[in-house]
Length: 436
Image (cartoon, rainbow, N blue to C red):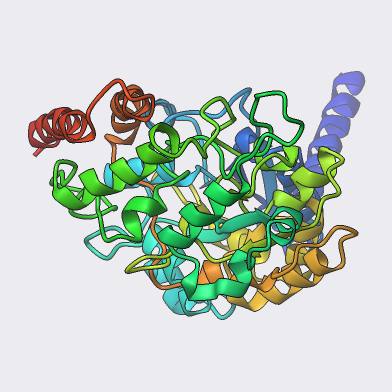
């Protein structure tokens, strides 16, 4: 009897101690929020999040942040299944294409009420393309922007100087499709005379960002709108003309390396005069490749417009969040603190979507050993009102799957641009009509 009594008292004491350890000083129960991390953002982003969790919990003892790190990035359908299954997620960081697809299916909270009452976050401080990216056609806002992957022109400054050509940055608005083609022709060459081209005007042709400005900046839109499009414009004359210009780089002029990487791996090799395949992380890519050639940044190739392809990462709150207010406090902390942004920039070298912190990023870029000339053109490109986004639709993956082999056949001269685009138009029209 006495032993049991002592045991009970000890148990109660232990329970009280355990309970008190979970209760903040001011007495409220501690809230736990689940942050669903996107491993596709890379280790540097992960390190930033982990650092900020420690700081946030020190300053907000009533909230604990648990980081959920999946083994790989998930698609929209996988994420929707995840939250429908009851997995607790309070904050997510899905990339733009995936996040927009999830948002179009009504799975995120509309953040307008939170932004309206926030003393630290306002979309007025964000560049126009960032605001567009997270706004649905009905006006609801499904995310708060974090950073921008804006794609300006990157150029090999030594090639332009040796070729007696003004740099794209010097040309400014005169850096247009004619100037880009002229430069590519002049700077494509066989430097050692072995019959193999080893210096190219530019890299290979088609993804939905590399060379897409050949369409967008001519006013050649793929669809009636980028966000939740309803109608294909793929077979219209401006789109056909733009695709023919891209194909002619390969077929007629032979100034684009069809074998090159279509993304960020090409420019750091030092073989290309100008590139539309990299973003604000280019300095980091060059350092990783031990590339030390002089380089620069200019606005994208211009026509009737001079916008840049821009991807926008953001933070979201799923409708299934058990404590949206606590989730919002965590988002505010991440995206409004100068200390948090300094850590973000130092860790990731990514360009903030918030104009207030762009100068901090630019200062870091200019301090690099092999800093680009015209670094301020990153910011000018990011703020340009004519920037364009991914095709933000649940059908994006299908569009990419259908378009890539068709367009690559055009680039290799196997198909006529008009016929290829007509086929793609018919396929996308059927897909869009099927979901109305």
